Length: 638
View 1 (cartoon, rainbow, N blue to C red):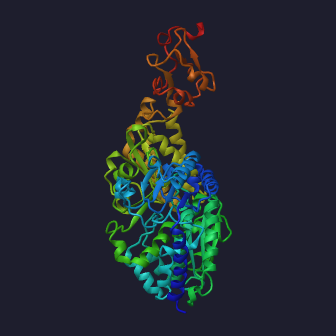
View 2 (view 1 turned 60 degrees about the vertical axis):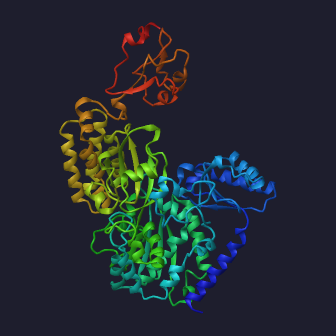
View 3 (view 1 turned 90 degrees about the vertical axis):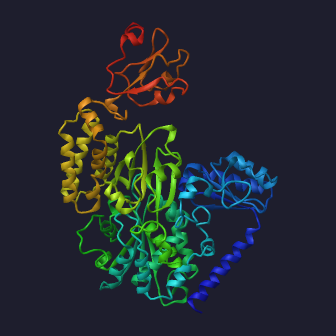
């Protein structure tokens, strides 16, 4: 039989299998890592126990992450005669209510629902909210709605249809389609994917290899993990198509060992694909054979750089190499190799199925398609979001993320991971695409975005990210190894009130030298957080150095905690009980005060102080001691 017929048979069987359960109620519980951290496995067990107790004919399935991580554990219930509803966050008690009140007695429990998944007359959908208007889901479309451990769910959603189409095309035609789509790599630099494939296809030497870089190491980034845990077949299909385009026989998925659930679901997906004839020898009856191996990385951030990743797979220490030659001509084991990341490869099936023109109709002319972001930090609705390229930072933070927590003021976004940049409020209208972000001093990077508010110190933020990249430096380049260490020491001095006026210019000088003298992108981009914070928040550096003051009230050595007498309740002793160093005492007038020499600045008292009082505050510059007049008597007299 032909490739088309073999695939049609597989898909028909999958659809028939799923149609058989469509007439029954269905409960989907998001059990990706974010859901599990919030208690999803316990909620899953309650649903199964309650369904069994009530002897209901209800299917309960595990799915991945829909992107609404702020609402985990998230549950979707499809019940014939009612709109499909998403509920979250769902605890064990709510799970019992949803079974007894909804599935048994027919009350949909709208009070627990977030949104409906399809238009209806009863309840608003996700598309009715600002986030739904902004988002355009392509690679996140099925995440959280299909069972990642059942290949039939993917097949029934047009999964592997692109592969069946590709196996009846010439490899050069596949490459031309990706080139025409103008797909740019979603791993950092945004290099054209089709051009990279073409280089490898034309390169001399065999065998050829394809590699998926799933070594997601940026603080605050979890896009790749969510995709692998929610829809692994999408990535696998994209990797197979890449292999066919360059005529590779072996592929690797280089994934962090810290992602055990992702590895487990990936391995299960690979096994099922082989069983269905979608992977391995003469797949779908074609003449093309290809297989994939999982390579667990050991957590070195530098192995996200492609030459270091290759060295790691080869069995050596992951160290970057000089380029050229590039991996497309001399990569794994010295052979032509294509390396793309999870998001890039996940777009491939959609482009090959729907065409280059469809893809180019989304986003901007030079950056078509969508961008997937992990929203973290001080934003209300943390999680994953997929938006068209060209969406502004304001839309991402305020419409998708629902603004800043606790009614605080927006200050900046750290975008592009530790190698990205900090962009201020004046950049909120900046469109999100490769070129615009670069002009602003940041980068697209992996897609991590950390939202910062008025309480964040930009000098400390720069120090935090530089501390990460300095520790993750492989040490091969002198400029990166010693230069980042020297920059980190200067930043540490500034945050401790030991900075000198000439330090700002010295930081900029060192940053430029490190960018010029480093071999790989880790070193070349490591100074970005420092350069952008100096560029946009120089006044904070000057306040630390010239005034011994931290405007964000974040740097321990430059702040003190004090209790405002006018706000303190004489009857409340919560702060005393919260203090681990017994620095808080009761004054003669029964109000509270803090011994500054005993205070460890752990923040416990500020957190413990009841919100109706808000008597504990941070001040900068630091106090030597509260005055005798404030205390109502010397502490030594008590």
